[in-house]
Amino acid sequence: MEAKSLTAPGHRLEDSELVLNADGSVYHLALHPEQIGDTILVAGDPGRIERISARFDRVDHRSTNREFVAHTGTLRGHRLTTLSTGIGTDNIDIVLTELDVLANIDIPNRTPRAVHRSLRIVRLGTCGSLQPDLPVDGRVVSRYGLGMDNVLHYYAFEQDTDELEILEQFIRHTAWPTGLPAPYVAPGDKDLVALLGEGNHVGITATAGGFYGPQGRRVRLAPSAPGLNERLTGFRLGKQRVLNYEMETSALYGLSALLGHQACTVCTVVANRFTRTFSKDHHAAVDRMIDEVLLRIAP
Image 1 (cartoon, rainbow, N blue to C red):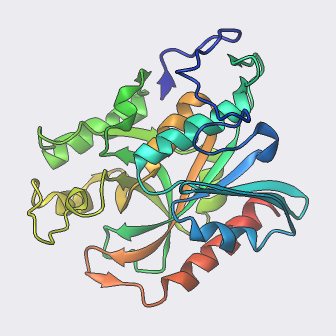
Image 2 (image 1 turned 90 degrees about the vertical axis):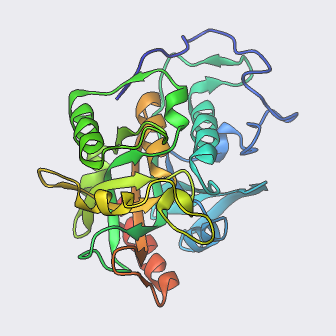
């Protein structure tokens, strides 16, 4: 996956395009460049941020703006930031763009920097399993994000050969409904996937644009594509299969790849959509995930 165009260093961004707060912080996250580390641990749930930063040796910065809670500190000599994103790929669009601004824009001059800073971004989330052999409380590391949302279609990019093969085979297998957003495939960072995938389930993660109908749930309204979950479960391309559903990874992976950042998603399975089961203590399972990820990225 590659961006077709990036704004050139030295090009001034207008006030309406790069929106800042009165103190010069980025508009939604309300952060300054010196308040983030090179490694960012993101979670949808603002309440999970305290659970992550409680494991740090020291917390130097805490801030809250809207649903975006940020804590920055150190763990075993590593400077880390943990940041809540809220739910959904629309929020990821905001978070990834503003993190990139903090890393790669000369904010006082409103111009992209000539020297690129690459962030390492790890999502600690929860998900629903789509495979009978992937039980609740297990962990999934996403090799690819399969976008069933629309966010990345608003950016100019090209897919590489491997991504196109997955996409073409997936569309053919699922007889993808024409009334749904066109899917896309975004890769996780290979080194992070290898580091965090050891001992866990690694595969394709389907990112939905919502929690109920977009993931095939029926409460009162009927989903428009009945049977889609079964087709997701049955998809195979070599050893690749769709392991799980969640709501952020496709945009996280896509925007990170296009902007030159390293991204990986690790999710705890809280529900198995195939066996219709739900975790009896998902908080404990999430805590185990946090401990494992921190040990691997900040040894």
